[in-house]
Length: 281
Image (cartoon, rainbow, N blue to C red; front, side, top):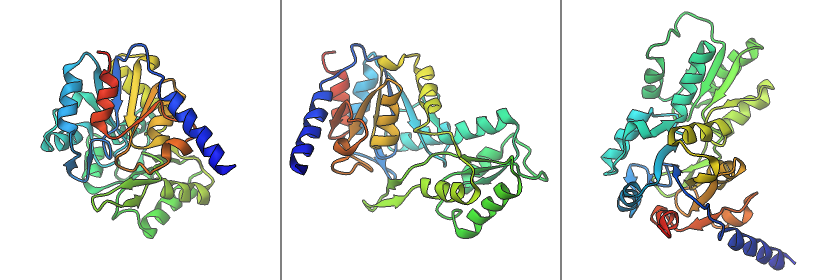
């Protein structure tokens, strides 16, 4: 029975993989795990990106990074030999800062040092009681004392907001393994405070809508490419985008079968994703 059910799901995945948008005008491209791991571009990425940019398909780089602004991430990608302009990049860190500014909040920042310095530019955060917590992934900051400090801010002020850059379960790291993602820390604070975090990055709909606005495309004209079947692919599909899963980064065998919604296509890597996007062009 289990074998039969797995076969039925596999057939469903294969059938869905035959679905293609009639007109692909834009690509929302995940970055970490899709284009690079650590500080190295994955094999074939540079040439594939060049082919995609030479076509009439628009490209926007959409990252859940809580460590980099668009300019710093673009610089990082350029150091890897990838042709990227800052105006075509946006990150969860930037979205979080814009949200804080629009709501005129006074947050306590739990971010990597460089990210914190960038976030504080142009903002007056000193000598004011915090009415929000901004939580990003930082291996040194996310300790029990810091999480407890965030808890106390949120618990002391019933109106204080918990703002998180993502709910990621895990991420691929340079040694080839997986490390725990920010979502575990977000869940801990939600459990202890009874608050629901405002997540600004993927899989939130507003993050994808920002990318489509930058591309100037409709959902049915847009493909999202990523290594996270839930936060990249399924989240985009839920909004009507075409979801393309790559078997790099945090991808685990069987993700495409066990997903809530099968990807529109599952391919070996980014180069194969570009082949799929540019097919019949």
